[in-house]
Image 1 (cartoon, rainbow, N blue to C red):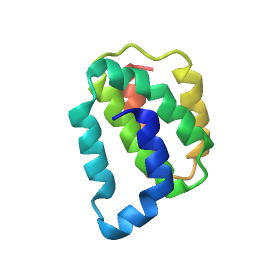
Image 2 (cartoon, helix red, strand yellow):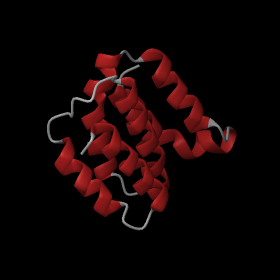
Image 3 (cartoon, rainbow, N blue to C red):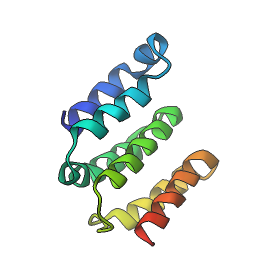
Length: 114
């Protein structure tokens, strides 16, 4: 599985898939966790960040924030991807009213010791 294929598929199909299976996003995260290497996860982080920044659906953004945190943990490094810190601030502004997503972003900050 490649992250760009995953993001495109999720963007197009998530509402239908979620109607069929309420555990859709959890299962998708499990697929990523089981199929990505640490290097693949690290390389996918910024793609997910940029996708979240451009997405307008709040629910999808929140679910993808969980995917982002999974990729960061899966990457098994505290090396911060280039451009991540400034993008993180953009995400924090985007999620200013979404406490759940802000908590995830705070966890990410702690993980990276930002």
